[in-house]
Length: 85
Image 1 (cartoon, rainbow, N blue to C red):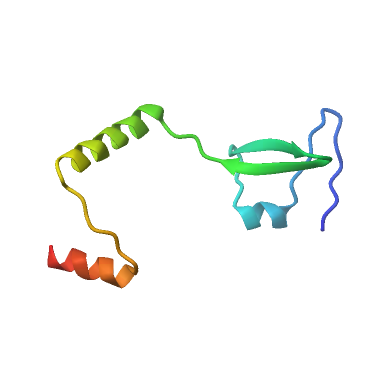
Image 2: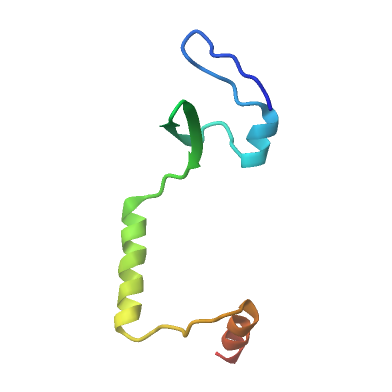
């Protein structure tokens, strides 16, 4: 466990070992949440809403057109299915 000091503007430095463990880089966004007297920081990704909506629309069109695959219990079953096509 590492101790960090709260600086003048309530800034803290995340120790190197923790940054490497959760792969935090300069410029990343973190969601801050309080649970009782504990502060939780979670890495978050920002996505382009238009791109996500376009991908959802494309998936819904595929679904309506019947372009779907069956469910697979194992990766090797999926790979075998893909080889046949």
